[in-house]
Image 1: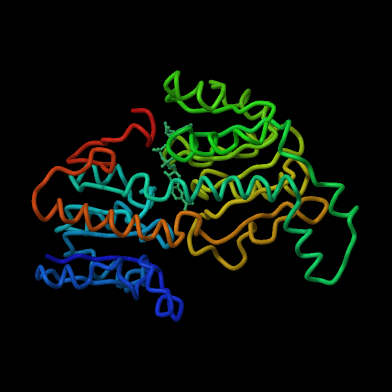
Image 2: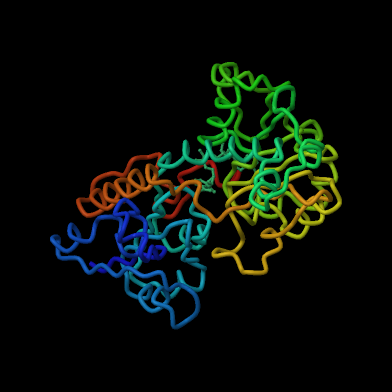
Length: 358
Ligand code: NAI
C-alpha cells in the first residue's frame, strides 16, 4: 500500500532531538514498522504547486498523513485526482486543511488524533492571555535593548483578576482553558458555542453561556478562539464583529488563522479597538514574510503575541500524536473499527458535530 506523509522539516533539530517525531526526518517514528509490513512510505515537506511531491504522489496514494503545522492542503481538485485515496489521517487536531465536503462526496475517511494536544494548546492560550494583558513582549524587548522605563510598560499592563474572559468554542481545548482560568479569579467566564456544555461541566468551571455572539464579545475583556475552522467560522472575527468588542479588548486565536480576518485584526490593533492579538495560527502556513500579523502593533507599539504554529506540537504532544497515528493505521490495516472520537468524516458522512451545524 502507498502511504504519503506531508510533514515539516526538522533539519539539524530533528537529528539532535529524535523526539521531534512530526518531522520529515523522524517520520512519526513509523518508518521501520511500515517497511516491515511491506508498505511504501513517502515522506516529504514539499507541498505547493503541481510539481510538488504532495501533488505528484497524491494521485495513487491510499493513505495520506498530514499535519496542521505544515498543512498539505487537500483541495477538492486534488481529491478528484486522488483516485486511490481511502483515508486521511491528521497527525494532531484540526482537519480543515482537507476539503471535508469533498472527502464526504468521495467517501474518503478523515481521522485525527483527537485530544492529543489539547492540553498543550490550552496552556499556550493561558500564556498568551497573560502575556497580552500584562504587556510582556514589549517589556522583554526593552530589557534586551538595554533600556529601563517602567512607566512605558506599566501604562498598558493589567491584572487578569477581575476581567471577563470568554471562549468561542467550549470543546476539549475551550473547556480546558476555562478550567485553567479558575484560580485567576476572573470577574466572569463566558462561552459561546452552539453545543451547550453539560450542566455539571458548566457548573464545575462556573462559566455562563451567551447565545448571541455580538452580546458575547461585547461583555469580554479577553476573547479566546477555540472552535474548528469550517464554513460557519471562516472570517467570523471580521470588522463588523470587532466593532462589537469592548474597546481595548485582547484577542487570542490558537484555533485557525482564517477564523479571523487578518486585515480587520490588524486595523483593530492599530486603532486601539484591540489592545492585543496573540496566537500561533496563520492563513496560510508557512506564513508569508510580509504577513501583516508578524508586525501589527497597538498604538503604544505593543500587543503582538504571534508565534509560528507550534502550540500543539510540543515534545509531549508529538509523542501523543505520533502514537495516535500509528494506532489509527493499525486499525485501518486490520479492518478494525476506529475510536469514534477520532472520526471527523466517516464513509460518506460527517461523524463529528464540531465542524458546523448540519
Ligand atoms: P473540539 O471538537 O473538542 O471542540 C470544538 C468546539 O467548537 C465544539 O464544542 C463545537 O461545538 C464548537 N464550535 C464549532 N463551531 C462553532 C461556532 N461556529 N461557534 C462556536 N463554537 C463552535 O475541538 P478541540 O480539540 O477543542 O480543538 C478545537 C480547534 O483547535 C481544532 O479544530 C483546531 O482547529 C484547533 N487546534 C489548534 C492547535 C494548535 O496547535 N494551535 C492544536 C489543536 C487544535
